[in-house]
Length: 117
Figure 1 (spheres, rainbow, N blue to C red):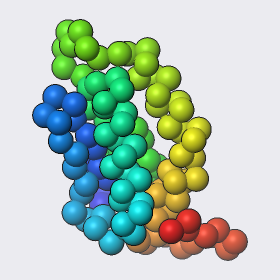
Figure 2 (cartoon, one colour):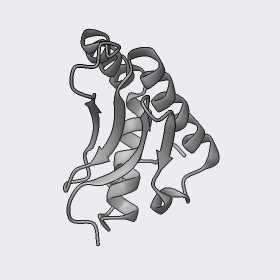
Figure 3 (tube, one colour):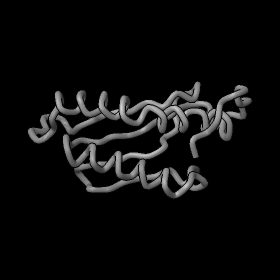
């Protein structure tokens, strides 16, 4: 069912919209809220579009795009903000990867690993 890239969520500063893939409605509300806050704050700070995407192996990637010649998009700020998110939200991002691998790719949970939900 899930062989290629799958979008988890994203925010767009140009359209001022947030999107959560309906396939992930089973996530706890506090996790969905945290994802929304993460995405919306990111695009509010640096502009552009932030999308959280699973690759075919279940890795969670933070993808950033912007409109060509967008004078409001902060490229350096974007890179710094992505590193900050990866550092400060490491547990959340790892748990979301594990969640996807177990519930969407059907992989077995390693012994001793717990989801943080």
